[in-house]
Length: 131
Image (spheres, rainbow, N blue to C red):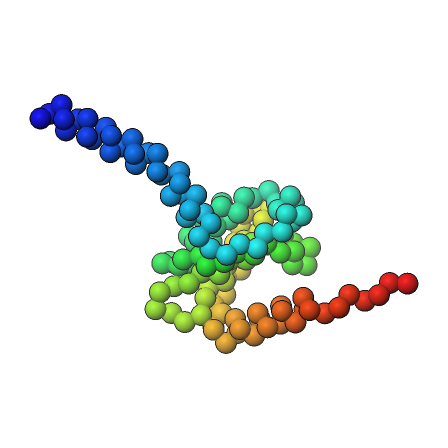
């Protein structure tokens, strides 16, 4: 029976090792990502490293979305983290060049909806004709 236990333990470990990369990959992409390719090329910090930094900042937070944006000439990963039992989200901004947290802010559901409406309005503006 000892030989059988050894074989079963080895098989279980092998299956777990084979599935671990898939689980990690699924975890990486389990939230909404808005990462424009032209901006990603300019970063020196990977999104996954920035995600770890943002998640470490908010205790019991779960990342729901990330957006890479140029804010005043600074590349920023903007994370929205949800904490169970709290309304709204925690926004954590991480510098995409240094990997340091730039700011954190609690956004209520109301302010979050207002920001989304403003962004939608800005994307619908027609381009000015050039002459």
